[in-house]
Image (cartoon, rainbow, N blue to C red; front, top):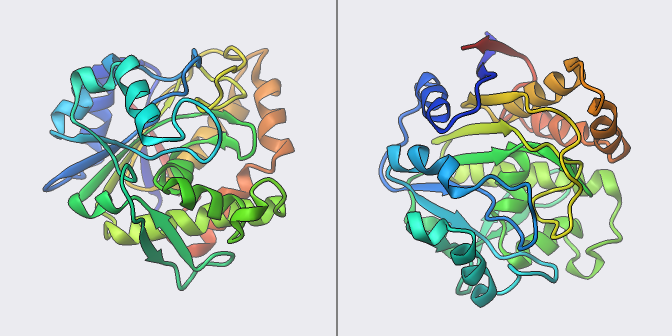
Length: 287
């Protein structure tokens, strides 16, 4: 039976809540809301006002983790300042999961490239997770969506370097590329298993630049907004987004696809599906 992915071309805060509700996933207990706080200087990240009704609906806490590269979010002090500047702290309770060490080590016995993942220790304070992803391109991953949020997004600063280096933090930029993508898929599995599948996913196809929200200097969006998707399956929702880009009749489509294809972005989806925590087969239900 194909996984259901709900889709709407209407991009509003209210539609995010509506599509989430259609997934039927009732996130219980203390809900961590993982989203991208946006690098200072980035013009494309989705603002707190857009996600406010959704975060309030699940009574969630916005969670983030420090980065592993120079910028406005690579230390707890700077990241908290950025969260304040970008308005997240104004509206929500905010928790930097790796704001204070030590990291929590999650085992990945089924991992193809890495057998452990390092995440902020505060993750143990939550019972479920809502992953709000801004779907767009990415300088290394080709694209950024739900799987990236689960992996690089939830990893601590050290964990990000561990994934990038495929287990060797001293080889951050020099690892075999497909192995890096497979490491992301491995790391995402550990988070899915940590929450025992008590996770829901929303991908927003808006402001689609070839660059990530982690870029202080990012290209402007290259194609028109497509819509919002929601699912209980991170593989299906990312695959559906990729398919919607391919299906688009937009002059900027090929520029985004060049970024995705040149980085072999779909391989992350392939690796995640092979690990069994999601399916590339889905039914797109337009609302």
